[in-house]
Image (cartoon, rainbow, N blue to C red):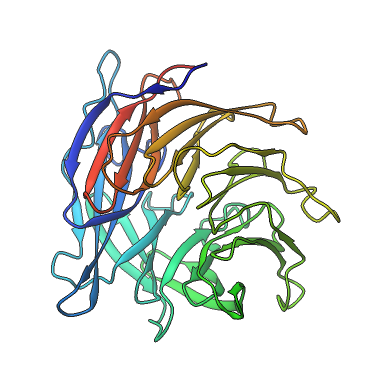
Length: 374
């Protein structure tokens, strides 16, 4: 299948430089129609003061009723950070479980080194927990534990930092507050004996194993029971910094990783601790350095790429159950005029709507664009 350019259905400018964009499958709140929650996180350096300011814009995109077409995400329902009271937002992730009161949680990584968790209920957003700020080290990324305790009251967050460190917090969740308990904080990546930015970190389906990617180009696998003094495995399949780790939401042993070198590797977690592990697939360059990769919410074989200066890509991955995965770019979206940093899906189970949303940094652009049928 030849790759095709996608048409956009919505475009607007973000108030600050857009760093992250995250959605969830449709939810219902009270008497309101079903909506896709969507959050855009922004970051901007004030060169006159040196302050790194941030902003969170929350959208509730209406799910079309029978016979309707997707109308876009509309205006923000709420905004956090209008008056520079929020440090720059570098990453954000939804918690994948609803609380008892049907509210949602959204965690953000900040230039101050903080992790902040907001509770979203209807149009109300409330800050319910934060870690301390750090004198050194921006919080570059974070991920919730998608595999652990199935209750809505406990989880974990792994976070990565610009000074080479990785942290893990146990999270205790109640209706009005979040409790953080730090269980791990360690030096993870170096380059030429100096700390290297840890661009990404993720839990895996094994509760004792985590993965991190550093600017030196190494993908490291850690046994959290072993004191994290050294990784249990270091994979060196990339020629530049490892920027994104994306575990498959339904196939527990499949993990996609991407790099500044513009390539994607698909790994089988069951074999990465072998003496000479190799990826199931190592793609050709996709046309831009990888920054975000999102598996389709319902289709196991589709992957959305945010490829920085190359825009976005839709990838078809066949034979994920085999030792030789087929990687094919089926669509491109290249309207962004600068780094495409955020990308996620706007999809319903009926496939009535199959849209991708993406945002880019320097041109402050948001786009929603149609994804073609397979």
